Length: 70
Image (cartoon, rainbow, N blue to C red):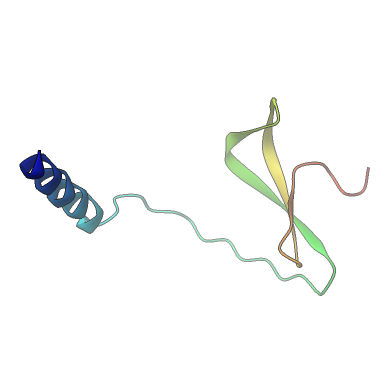
């Protein structure tokens, strides 16, 4: 049993030491205090039984999925 733990630990450490193959496009937005920006997601995000392809990022750290103007 101890050998399996060692093997699993080494496998875990090896997997997380590999460089990431994913490359992402970085998009920055300029927003003032107490504002928000619409960010289109490259995937559909499931949240409380609904799928969302757009998010709204607020400057206070809140992420919303419903348009704040409606």
